[in-house]
Figure 1 (cartoon, one colour):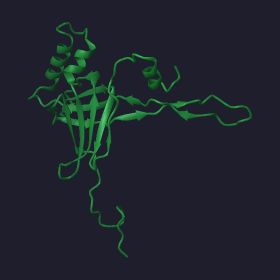
Figure 2: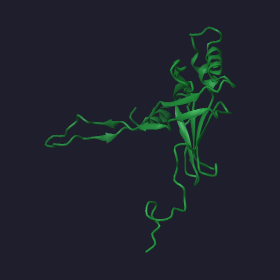
Figure 3: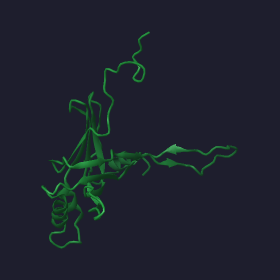
Figure 4: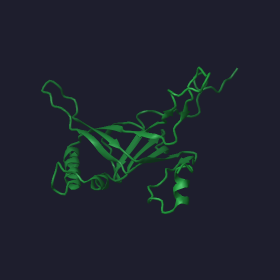
Length: 196
């Protein structure tokens, strides 16, 4: 009896693999990226300690706003282009020559949009994650060791305000864009679910 299960039959589709991905930062394809987290989402749980009268169970429910967790990337420093020098230049650009003082929006502008694309065996995109207003919160330029011939790796942690994702079949999640403050009571009520 022939089966079409992935583990029991001859698969017609190759499963997604960890090593099939591309990263671009500020529109530049970063071919020296070694590892990369995909975005993480936490949905807060409210009411863990709230009990109704005569109820042994808490009244838990999901919060209304998801929380985006930072992602970490590691890069091999290819020497040409020199990754460490590029990062130092971007940090200096975000400080207007006054490093370590950094201007927040300038830092976001220096790194631009971060895109993580997961690809299949033919190089076609399966998932494309676009991180909006991404900026590094930590940069580790690696370590040196006379007893090792390993590559120097640079580790960066990125925060972002939201992400946009497009799947191969066209399924999409597009985040709300940052907007101005409400200018009327009607807009304020629409924004906070009429709790104002």
